[in-house]
Amino acid sequence: MKDKTVIVTGGAKGIGKAIALKFASEGANIVLNYRSTSPEEVKNEIEDMGVKCLTVQADVSNTEEAQKLVDEAIAEFGGVDVLVNNAGITRDILLMRMKEEDFDAVINTNLKGCFNMMKAVNKIMMKQRSGAIINMSSVIGLAGNIGQVNYAASKAGVLGMTYSVAKELAARNITCNAIAPGMIATDMTEVLSDKVKEQILEGIPLKRFGQPEEIAETALFLAKSKYITGQVITVDGGMVIGR
Ligand code: NDP
Image (cartoon, rainbow, N blue to C red; front, top):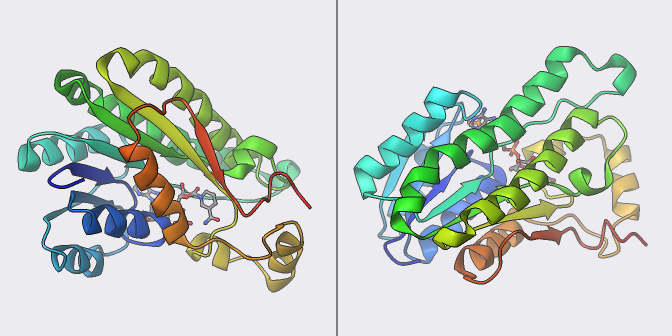
């Protein structure tokens, strides 16, 4: 990864932060996207590793802002080697109470945001005749979940886009893969009640939540793999296969 340029969306905390730090530790320069969380702490940690870090505020669900993020990355580093589409939100509620805004907000960030970013890097990666795209899906996109109709739709959609982009861009030596994490200890899962967490734990054969670093390891593996494309790697302690 030395001297490669890696864009991580939603990189100021959680899984995105772990991914940014992991790639930086391998010598990559990082374009750290954030929306509302201050990126300064992560930027300092990255620069302490002797690589560069460009922070760019952008809402990936906004087409112009996503394009601006990629344009700034190219202006600073001259290209984009790896795109990690990590930014995501939840708005969990039962279907009968789910409002149109809840559905749209999750689709716009998780699915359209991923589309916007892939479209924005498409030209430069085609020109380079190289690149790796890693999209964050979820086990919920594979199996569905009560109270997550919007989130499941967005994450299943990410998989469909991943397979299609993998086919479209393979001729230009660009790979596109997805990761489907299970329950990872971040702010996103911290909001769940202890009771819900215990219920989820019961369904995880490895009997623990995953750590953001474990997703980062998988992202790095996929970015380095030159002959894996159109795949989804589930990193879930066995959650999907069940007990
Ligand atoms: P967090 O809530 O900790 O972090 C989410 C990140 O996404 C934040 O950095 C946030 O930025 C960013 N973000 C949200 N909306 C936007 C937007 N419109 N534009 C740019 N950035 C945005 O979640 P996790 O780290 O847990 O999740 C990371 C990814 O992994 C998500 O896609 C999530 O769906 C997925 N995932 C997580 C699982 C888990 O168990 N934690 C399981 C399966 C998948 P900011 O704070 O600046 O607003």
